[in-house]
Image 1 (cartoon, rainbow, N blue to C red):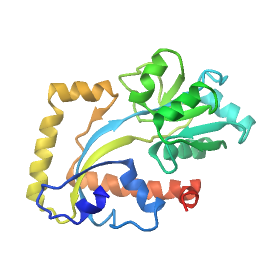
Image 2: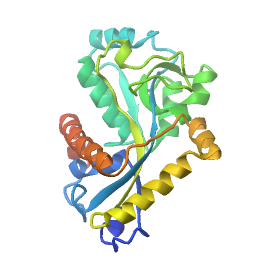
Image 3: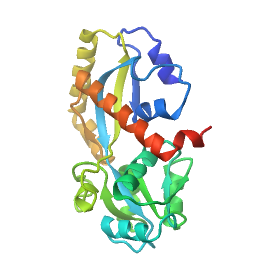
Image 4: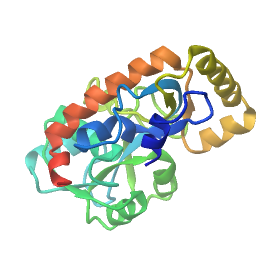
Length: 251
């Protein structure tokens, strides 16, 4: 496992881990990891935040989030929601949505996003928090309906699609993110140099364009502030894993 390799590597700035939401979810999901996520790494930089978009099958008779919530409340556990797998970021985003909206539906995990979107188009599942980059072509061609984005602000890629928070679930936010971490003992001067190089790279025009094409936004959250972000993500994920029963389904 890459994370275990990095955790045990020399803290010299040459061995780093580019990671995502799973870094914060896995401690609650798996009983035996070969490292301590909270203690064996130090944050270098949050690199990018990618909105997920709440999409539905074209056959779902809901034009917005409020109508979807009303439909789900009127038919508890009748409808299915997709995810790219048990304990994935998409799974956790939907569990948070279901919790905040006070609705119940059946979780259908897939082996990845493409399979989930295929079944969504066929109405085998009815809603899905999908990565924006993967869902965008299907949204623009009308093969799935976009109701809202998961982030605190609207996405430049879908400016007319509201956030979940402004659509009837106040305070809702679930970011898909990517960040760089290093072995915990990495000295601050090395971290500072890495931070400077990453932030410089994120300002390059081609990098900005590539991120924008995926609906991603570059981040300036670094070092200690990124560490605090990771701690909050670990805590939030532990609660969502507990509520969802995701760890039990993997046993």
